Length: 383
Image (cartoon, rainbow, N blue to C red; front, side, top):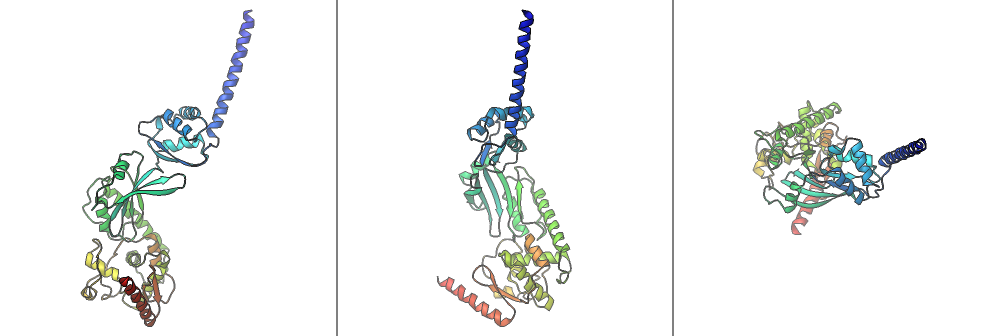
């Protein structure tokens, strides 16, 4: 009798072990299988949250077939204590294994983003949210910290642990403007005693975190610009009359200030290169403006005749060749245009009323283009 009972018990244990093994194998397959999500979502993991709470949220959002399997998978992989607060984009059909990697890496990539945009006219703070369904950003608020109070949306963003922050340096800003902009970024720490070298800060977007050092961020910008300048100089057209990378930087900064149309950069570069080759003066207003403002903000008015005639190092209506230094921080595209301009015979250009320029080879053609531009200006003044 006891032998019979023991035999039945052993059989039951074998069946149970077999079923348990099958369930584990099934669960493992479910954990790595394609998920049910049909539209990507933004998963918010609150500070102090745990895997159980996150698994319930994922199940409610339809991102996983079983919150229990997700939680057990995280536990089995020793990932439960690696969960990080933030806002994470969960892509369509993401498996539980893929989602677990997303939430432990801690790289927020959706939700609220605050951009400190250092522009030519002023610095603006832009608060926006990513719509995960469309991948489009929705602007929540925008303000100039130097002259406006921070809106409620900014206070909400600062209180949110998942908010992402970045500093965006717009091409064509001066190093003084970048320095002044960083001083206004309250998230950053550290003093900035000196203005960085003009032209040597790479326009780009830089991710920042609360407590980052301002000087360290400037060093990152300068290192990036050094790499870009070196790469551009290495790939230069050897016929271009530039004697050094520093001269290439100067010309690139002038190109950056002369046009905001990407497709025009190499044409504008060709005009200045042709003038240098022919020994003509560059005669460009942005250099004169820099001589007046010293790069400290915008002029805010037209140039006076006395300023156009004044003998200053940056007045290219008076001096020969390039000015003594850059007048702004040029983009990678302007650096490349300076050392590899289009091959043209152009030596003149003027605004054409569309945001671009009309180029000319002869003075007669240029004067005709100038007359057209003055007619456009007069019409706009009349309107």
